Length: 204
Length: 204
DNA sequence: TTACGAACCGACCAATGTGTCGGTCATCCT
DNA sequence: AGGATGACCGACACATTGGTCGGTTCGTAA
Image (cartoon, rainbow over all chains, first blue to last red; front, side):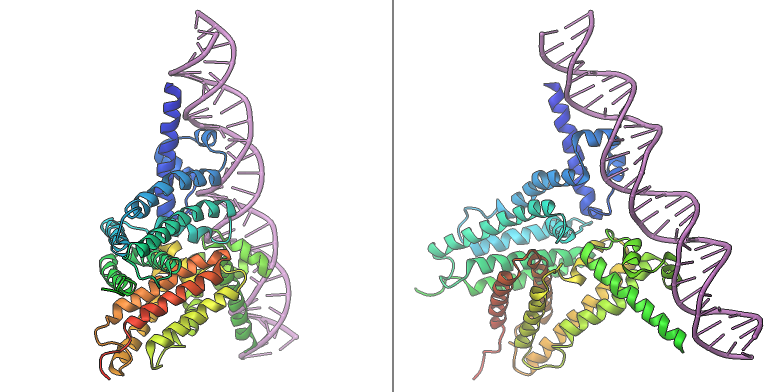
């Protein structure tokens, strides 16, 4: 049983460092040697656990990246009432951690989607899956918000969800240069304005 | 005088093909050899005109990319009245061309910013310069819209501009997978909703 | 027409890329 | 205890990278 533990530990170490470095430098600009050097591991060890760089990356996406996005953007809103305020707070908090992270390189998921857009369909599928989870979650909470009387019945949940995701991905890209704080404030003010539009305000 | 013409022609050919391929495959995933092969030009020719890959890329950004962004996103709105409708139409048209382009890889400027974020400061400066032009243009036309009575006096022009840019960059990234048409429609509907918020509606 | 230099060629280089493979050692099952 | 095997090592193979350099071609000015 000791064996399996070690295996898991090593793989996880590789994945964690991989996510970190791919995020910092991009997939194509990060070599396996770079990662291995930081981990003091060998080529042989790497190719024992993973069959290729691409498969390695996909495993990182499906395991680490998925959980990261889920815990940051999905979990905090799922099941909650008052969708619009909940979503706004969740996004604001997410931007705050990005802002406090003094070396921020953007929205991981967004960066990778950008890098792989139009190529490497296997990787894109893994990335899009994560995006889909977020989107579905947004749509469903908005729909529920309608029946619960928090959201205007005329609101187009799917369009709103797409708009939220789009703007979030964009602002995370732009926040990178150090002008994070200012941007976050401006962005959130407009997002909240936008949200006010579809608050339920017909009746009583 | 023939000499100079040929020089310009060759350089432009290199830059144009470079923009095309960097856009399709990303900067780090496109080698100079790749580009040269497509152009049937030699290494020597390349390094006669450009001193390095990076300098080459910067020249592409400053000359071709700048004009492209300017003609598509800045020129159509500068000096116009009724900023909100003008901007919305401009963005919609821009999304339309992206949608019709059956092989679209996202917003060129956005992709590159993403790829270089946090590294290669020289390149980032060139990219940010373009973004700045767009932003300044948006802010100034919005401000003018206020004095002309098209935009609510309470609107925060800078925040609006940031919000527009953010959401546009994001939606262009997401439009890539073929689901362009649907997304464009959803995005534009929400953007126009958002714009209605700050239409001038206090007084007569 | 001749000499010169701009424009371009393509072989070459060192560094780096991913991926392979035979071997080593600790751990586990019997 | 001991053979099998899981986990890992590191030298190697081979393609590709950005970049160099001596040479060739050819328009052009004297």
